Image (cartoon, rainbow, N blue to C red; front, side, top):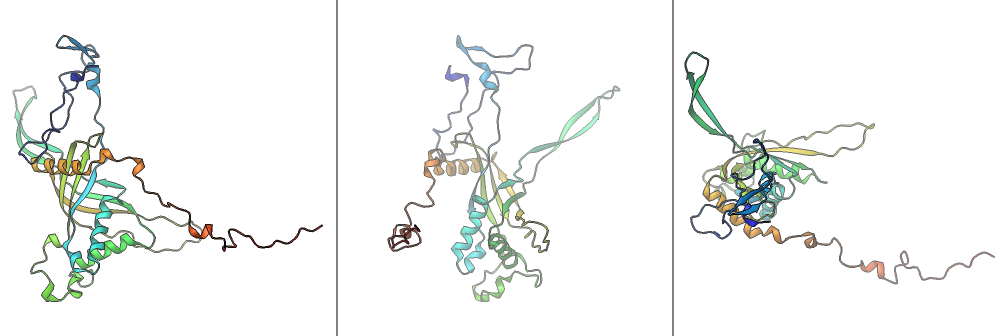
Length: 302
C-alpha cells in the first residue's frame, strides 16, 4: 500500500510559537469518489497503482475534551478557595456525562430577484451568520448533594440571591475587600473544548468559550411515594457562554499546544490507579478472632 494515497499536511513539524496556522491531516478529495459512472476503487499516482477506495474513509465525530482555563474569581473570596475552584474544574472536566451546544455552523442569507419569466431567480449574498454556542452539561448528583451545594453557592453568592436580589458575597466579605466592580470575570468560567483526531495528536476542532455560568440549579424537589423505588437525580445544567471557533488561528494554536502537552496518546489502561494495593493489616492480625480464630474449639459430640 502506497503511503502517498493519503495527502497529509505537514503540521506536527510546525510546533509553535511561530505564526503558522495549525492544519489537520486531511484526505485528498481529488481522489476516490464512488458516485460517478463507475466507482473509483483503484487509481494511478506517478505510474504506481494506489488504493483510491481508502479516500472514502468517513469522518466520525470524537468526544470533545474540556479544559478549564479560568474559574470564577469569586471563589478566591471564600474559605477553602482552592477546593471551590477545583470543584468547578472537576464539574466540567470529569463529571459531565454529556456536553452539548458547541456550534460554529455558518448560515448564508440571500437576496433574490426574478431572472426572466420562467420562474428562475438570481440569488446574491446578503449576510453570513455563525450559530451561537450555548453549552449544556448533564451530571449525576452524588451522595450528600455536592453539585447542588456548588451550584447553589455559585448562583446565590456570585450571581444573585432570589430574596435580596444581589450577590450574597457582600454579606461575608468586608466592603473594603470587595472589588470596585462586580464584573463577569468574578462569576464566570472560560474553558477550551477540543475535538481531537482518533490518535489524540491533532486538533480537528476547538471552541474557546467564555462567560459560562449556571442559569439554573435544577430539580430541588422533594416528594413521598412509598410504592416506588428510590430515584437517581440527573441534572441538566445550561451554562450558556459565547465561543471563538477553531477557524481562529489563535484558538487552534492554543488548542494544539494544550493537546500536545496533555500527551494523551501515551496513556493507557495500565495507568489506572488501584483502589487497594495491600492487604488490610486487620485481616492478617493473629489477634483478630473474627477473622483468624485460633482459640480452643468445642469437641464434637460423640
